[in-house]
Length: 107
Image (cartoon, rainbow, N blue to C red; front, side, top):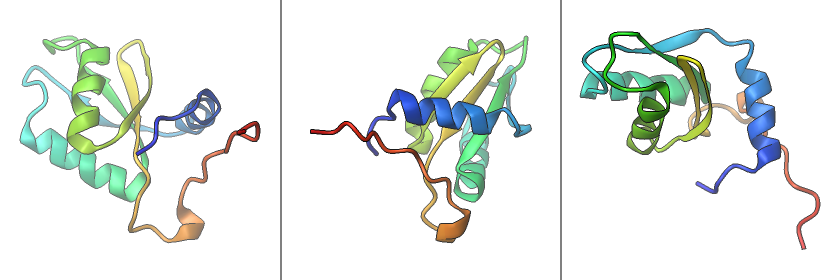
């Protein structure tokens, strides 16, 4: 997947404002179960918000950066204890997919 542009990242951050946190990283860190849960959620929604609990050994940045390659997703943002991941879905119908803005100034 191509690297997100700053405009696309801003668009996804805006969309992420309205979604609930569905992924929680606790003291066990990132295990197979959490990766499967994240994969399922990304396939269904494309954009997911996660949270790192106080008792976790990982910082929110570390958790997001470890989870991204495991789920083939991109880190959109990390703020406080929360992080947002994005991966385009291949199973969703076209009308339900998130359409990213494209940069008009390509030469």
